Amino acid sequence: MKFATKAIHSGLSADPTTGAIMTPIYQTSTFVQQSPGKHKGYEYARTQNPTRDALERNLAALENGSHGLCFASGMAAIDTIIKLFKPGDEIISANDLYGGTYRLFTKVFEPYGIKFHFVSMKDKDSIESVVNKNTKMIWLETPTNPMISIIDLKMVAEVAKKHKLIYAVDNTFATPYLQRPIDFGADIVMHSVTKYLGGHSDVIMGAVIVKDEKLCERLSFIQNSCGAVPGPNDCFLVLRGIKTLHLRMERHCENGRKVASFLAEHPKVAAVNWPGFETHPGHLIARNQMKDFGGMISFTLKEDSQKAAFTILEKFELFALAESLGGVESLCGHPASMTHAAIPKTEREKVGVKDSLIRLSVGIEDADDLIDDLAKALG
Ligand SMILES: *Cc1c(COP(=O)(O)O)cnc(C)c1O
Image 1 (spheres, rainbow, N blue to C red):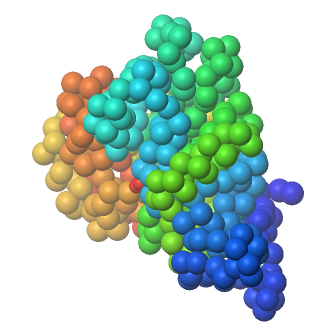
Image 2: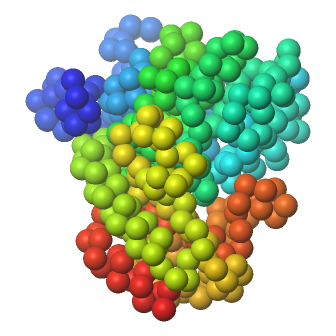
């Protein structure tokens, strides 16, 4: 089955009791048993809920995995993955990372004795230089946030395989429409469903997709034990959002291309980070592992100051200044003071998060209006 068909049908079937074509919102905390232990597959809604099940099956199909697990947020999904490990274990993470992930790794899990190495994932050597007998997992995002750099999924898979490491990819920016890490050798795909999958800026949710039964069992055990599960209403909203994922992504990509091209020509702009440009260092890799280049763009100004960036951000009328990304409406942000404020200045400047860096999540409005708004704000 092709992607658009999967988005609309996978994991879903008409409600067995009523024939309702849309998966009902099973707003219940528990399920009646006929006799102790004898039931219809559902006991208690932290463990399983039919609305959540439908979404989990749908996500597994979209990512070409075998199992999906949904969580109360993207962070709760990451939290669950890291709880696979124990004190003394080491994880190699890409150094260009969502700020909240960096905070969870360094401020929550390091004190529990899990060690993280933050490295550039441009080549095998920099990853392998920190592999040792305690290394258990490789973690990365691509495209990265907020530099929109590209990491070669297949190259990292080779390193993970060679050293028998679990290989996890945060696929939030690309979505399964653009890129399916499992096809390139990943063991775990994670999403902030809050972003493109939900797509309408009205839900906080996370997901984990795997292809291995054993790994799924371990993650399900943690999901149920720790309990950071989403409610059925939110699962319904995301199921509804995913039905148009392919259409939304097509427009995000088309608008992204137009906005990036406009910015690249603008006299006040120093550099535009968007993998669709042939000059982008990850362009060929992106061509190889992504269907298109997405709607996430970041750029720096010739006048590299926070003040210059703030002036522009305040002038936008259509681009709303807000955390988050991936919704139908266009958003803008200032990574150094917003999403990446938790990362020390020296660390963030190492990966290029300068004071004038502005990040855009290009929405699905008319591109002409978005470009007008950018032209006015840039002055
Ligand atoms: C937003 C985001 C997260 C965290 O997800 P929440 O749903 O906000 O908890 C993780 N990774 C990336 C790349 C994100 O953009």
